[in-house]
Image (cartoon, rainbow over all chains, first blue to last red; front, side, top):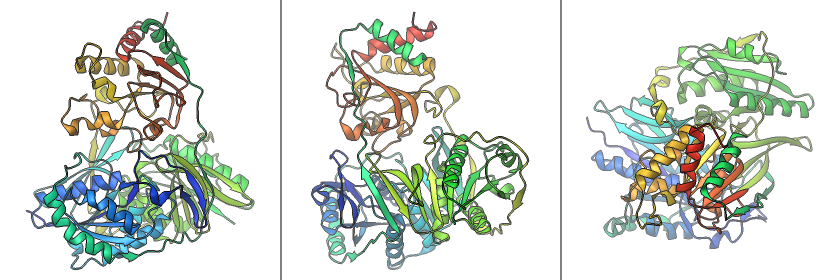
Length: 269
Length: 347
């Protein structure tokens, strides 16, 4: 039995992990210094979710992937130039803050509303994908909130693998404590999966895929709905970088034997 | 007046895991700091009486429970229904829970259902000017923020390992059972098992004293111009076996497989620490052949004592981040360390 899924991936943008990040106080609360100048990338876990979605769609004929992304429109456009070359999807853009200091509930409300507004969405075929947390807010809350708003009661977090069984049921592997996976069998869609890393490498850029995607990406960006995230009820007393610079003792001239002895003694104390 | 509910699930054997006691410790401290607050406990599992009894001497004044075979499984629909029912019965305004994988999956959804808010990865809870505030990390442990909320119920997920476990003793707890009506829709998912490496192949050990971090240097060409992967594998696994350390790895080393390069076969994304991996908590950490600057070093943000072995004396991973940096060949040092550990220790 082959099921054609409608896979909606929620994924925003984050500052390039190689950038130096410094918190500052802005009139709207905490922010990053020169935030709009920082190069951005698709959130790593959302990226895994997108690649897994595309792989699933490829193996389940008739399936389609949407990417719903909330972020500043100009930044989204910049990131989509690269992401659009990876895998086929249709973009739904929401123009708003992608800051790590925004409220997960407000973000979830905007995402759920956007998913519900996707035309011809068949909830019986719906799989909602996203990262299990982001590299910005790291809330571990947004996807669950989205699922609740859409009435999806089969939710999985820290997912590394999905397999469609012959009877249409889904076998899902979720990360649990101690380097283990919990294996669950779900009757089928609708379901929500918050992805960890999955098992797929990042796809190589494919200009042909990019050309096709860009036909919908640019119009989607042009009609991106503005989203105001007010952070109602949430207030920050402060955000600071950790003061953890250690005074490192450099040991240069010891033999491997002596270093080994020192390390073993240290391990044992 | 705040009603603080500690929400916990039992383990398969009916006991409470250490993170529950950590959450209880945080909640009890909160209760002590908030005049006229109430502290309650909610437990979910197949049978919860033994778990309730194991913490009966804690300052909680009332216990709620949801029990039955349906609540043995770590499953969203049934866990959410149980947690919702207990929160309603307790009229909780603040819910403190351990951020186990089971609760992390479900509690933010319950917060939405009850019109509240959820904050996870919380590492500190305090009362400032009569208001509850929590500390958590943002941008993958690169900055720490302190925040407060007006919405209730407020779900606070405590990061395991971030608190001292409570040492409240045993007794006999009187538990008020809460009924939960489940529909067939709640049982569309079934947990069919746990997949884990064989005992001798398990390299992730959250309770280990030591985190052993391996970097991409282990797979690079050595002084003789050749790579030495079999030797690297033997040394790393030998060290893990002798030291009982937990194994962490940099992203680059884990990702080599996906790029078609030679890999260490026992490493997976589950071992990955740092920006897109875990940030485990261990008393000590030893990094070997690791390179990189600040973004890559967040993997050992929560490691107590840190030492590093690297051929580069200016290595950004170690300088200012480790207590001791040994400028040496990790292959040679770890081989000697393994010999010493096998013979019973340094002499």
